[in-house]
Image (cartoon, rainbow, N blue to C red):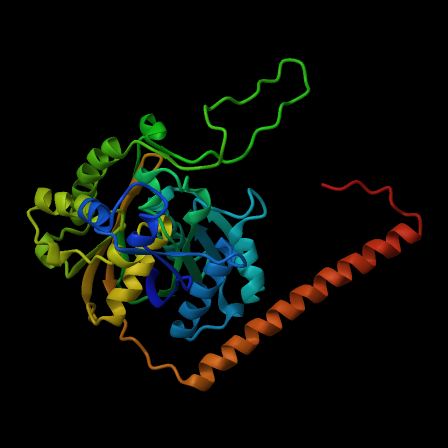
Length: 381
């Protein structure tokens, strides 16, 4: 049997920080009001040139450096996101191109704030079945671009960022040990983001979508989401512990989706666990949706909160409604990466971009040659 071990991790946060005080100049709020209700002080906002894909690439590149793997060894890339650049192509395909991961399949996964745990399960099972040997799982979001910045209820919550892990197959037991995935579509309206502007269809009998939204912005029933989240965090952790025949005492650290502090505090009370058992960094990053768990993992590692043989729990919850939890046996000591190795890998990514541009140029040349020869009758897909 093959086991999917986490052997690399990386994160990326945009440089631009927005404080609660800055938000108080935009909407009727204060630093104290926001912090008391959410536990958030600051959040990172992507620059104009940054996208969900570029954030994801930066996190993935750093994770591959830690794992000491070349992009050519990656066989699967999954990006969990609610803020893709396009409906298609997938964000994951753009990341594959940026990395130069020439042998990797790539796709996006949409499960809102639970997305990273869902993607981790998909990748770990691909490794367990022998379909792939190495995989990159990424959570990446540009939430700032789907927020109504005049809505105090949502604009104070969200931030941008990306986190990634590298999974590697091994015959040694450990890694991703068990996962619980759940959903309840009857609560779809409690937390939603319309996918596209809808154009009228000029065909008799076709219906024009009328979902009540006129802009692609987040719509959330905060009170209902709070009740949902506090219940499913506890139940999903209990479910996944049963699968592994473990108790809460066997868990070194719980890394939850960083929605807000009050939700996690309520869940901790339900589980009768101290808050010290939960890793929190929402104060500095805000709610980064699918990116929040891998971002928190990176911080936990850098702070020395994880040791080899520790059992850790990832737990996500969000729109769908969806929720999920995974137990992972941590068996990696953070490596020391030399400056030369780091810079050489950056050079390789620059070269990958160059090869990508060359392939695009070749396609254009070939297309022009076909047109000039008059052989333009072949239909496209």
